[in-house]
Image (tube, one colour):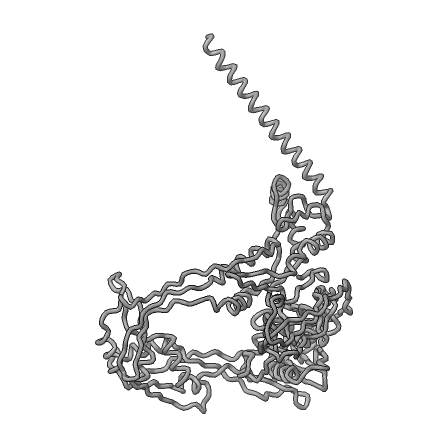
Length: 634
């Protein structure tokens, strides 16, 4: 009996402890709920406690306060980021510098508006239970809101390659080498070194997202070959077998591969010298053993095809184009499907033919269909102008005027289907000398280099204005880095740069839209022809604010100009922010509203000065810094 008493007492004590623990937890929960309710009331229009952007706390700040705070705190990013290897240092600034404003593209930009919006939504954008848990976690610990960054990784990697590529020595595989006499040898493989640009730009992006601009030191890594000379056995018999397949006849069957009835069947003969030019060493695993064999090298075969055959076969797709003639839509350019030799499939055809003791090889051709066929013109429903946009290019130099004309002509007469998203970059196609464009100069470090694309933001801006005057939804648009004289008033411009950024919009009408472009004097005029559906379009005039003076003129010494010769970019421009409101009221009564905000950095004038020898103080290669005080995008 006495032994049982302690057990009962222990049980009672355990119940008391559990009850006390339960009451304690319940009390803490009630207090937490009460405190969170107080927090919710206190922070009704403010960012919740514990919300961080990088190392910066936004606790208790309204959206406007948070934006101003981050602008001040992120000033370090306007100086760019330093990359280095050994003694060489290169500063990557947020924007490039060009003699043409259209080519002054951004490499990276922090969108403070979107960053603050994301921070404000922490604890507000999900179910009550999830929001409660998130607020509690942020309160007890911290929650990190993302720093929203637009980031042109390919272009940054390209710039790093241009600056540091001279330090690299890529590995070289053992290769099949032919002598003029017809004898062959196997070259010695070579070990090399290369930078991992993808990793470096990954670190760059990670730093940006944490609001840091720490210097990044590139690491030169060993680059090992894959094919070694010592692994190559006797290839004499294999090489002779390939050479003995000559002559080989490549045949193009126009009836099945082309939509152009004027095309004829064609044939190209490849001799032993041609076959030699295709052959390379390839790793083959037979019975799980590594073996080096002679085979067709895809890249070498493509070079042969591109040189001998492709010019007569390959063609880009051509869209049907239309014009307004005597008040009606008329076809002035018929559509044509594109076609291109399929290298991999042709190699397979070649091997299959040889395995069947045939020397006739069918060229495999892949087609890309034109999106419009030009048929049923009367059924397009195009009867009137639904919107017009204009822009001035007064003062443009000759090359810029030429490119504007080429770009405008490229999209003139194109049809946009109902529901289709139109991409200006896609519609323009290849932007280089082959399509008639002329280069403009950009500044990269202390050199002037030609680049294509100058002037093409004129069609981009004109198209943007045509779109919002037509009441169509815009799906992608970015303003220029700084105010460009051709695109005033500020806030109504759209920049493009292949492949990014693009300008895109959707034809949300029930009918086709026809683009008509024309240049009259110094004015670009674009019309959208379609059928009005009763929508009412309203757009306010741009509001411009936050004017910031630019830095002083910057002089960069260069060896590209004669000593004493000076070449300057556009004059300095004030930084500013701008916005206009866009409202579309549909016949159904539905209303869609959008505010287009633009942020322009203050832009200093940059001049290249020709010298006989670069001084030590001007070889840092830095581009002009961008001042974030003017805008929400750095």
